[in-house]
Length: 121
Length: 107
Image (tube, rainbow over all chains, first blue to last red; front, side):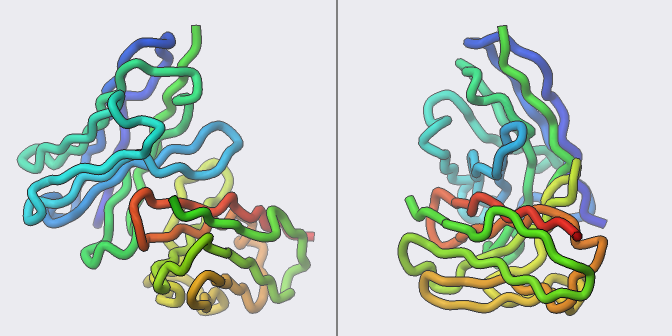
């Protein structure tokens, strides 16, 4: 059974840093692209970042709103995905979801339960 | 970036009603359109991929159609458990973008 378990969220001051983790199980992580998607309280979904799979050299892409501040990474040997978030601003407050891209890269077929990041002084 | 415009933003319908949600892209997206269902307090769940491919386990009352810039999610007979917010998402280009969501309520 595919499972994604998000962790690492919490309360952080503006300008601070946080590292989110996603523990993957039930599938071979190295075969899949992985994405982070976030949702501000009461708002819609916003794509944050993507890491491609091993076959595509783990290339990364970012939303303009986080470029230069966030870094997506993965450790396939530990079945884990990460999101390092630096220089956090209040607008980064959101539930962050780890997602798996389907094998055909057409969709986000599995989602973690989310981890809440609150940026506040 | 491709803008996704969803309508309506909310709707209220009775059990058994047919419900239709539309999603319009700011340019053609080659049928690379997915639909997600998010129940209150839960993570989104993939319902339909690539315009019309129903995911395993999703009831057949859900269907998707469309082409070019215009896409539709239909629920043929609304059930109480369909209470949720539905999002469209284009997968044609990075950055991935989502519609603003349609909140479905049961009368």
